[in-house]
Image (cartoon, rainbow, N blue to C red; front, side, top):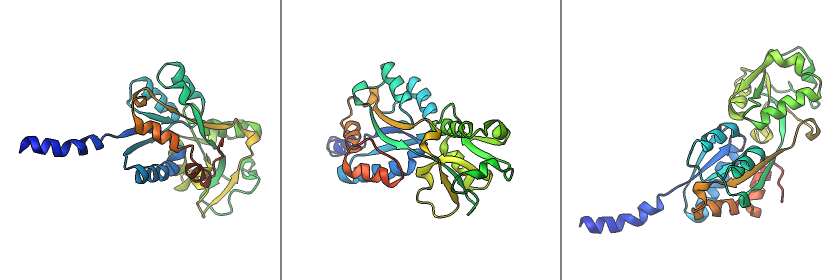
Length: 243
């Protein structure tokens, strides 16, 4: 009976194996939706972890067993490939991010972002520019507008773009630079879509990591991200795509 039980359980146990994906925090909502659609189609199991791209880079170089990395930039996946920790041939751009200035207060942020030049706020939230590309884009924007020195003392740093959004959504910061994808479907508050010319392009690359090179599910999910169905979902969250 014990042997029979093992034979019965073995397929289920094999099925329980999971593909682990490190996902840049700005891509949280679309990643969840894409993963659910992929799992429904295939029956495979994806485990998503969300955080800053810089933190994931550190974890991966220290041996974290992720199979796929969906970064908020192109630089970090390329670095991992150069280090031999990722498959260079698997690199591709899955999304192009957009930066937005957002406030939970209706009518607070104007259509040109002129509120930044006012003295009417105490805090502006920005993700850590050292680890979060959207944070670096926020700093670029302030410098392009000639306002960085004036506002430096008002900047509140979020560990990730998710925490940065929480600072603004809860009112702990009157406004902040967040990913457009976080607020594209939010009906409340006010926002200004920052011109692309004010910051370095936020090109977000995906890469197959070393642990995923023998995982057919990991490879299948990366292929799925290039399908018209997946691209439509990505665009629905305000991202540009390379295809």
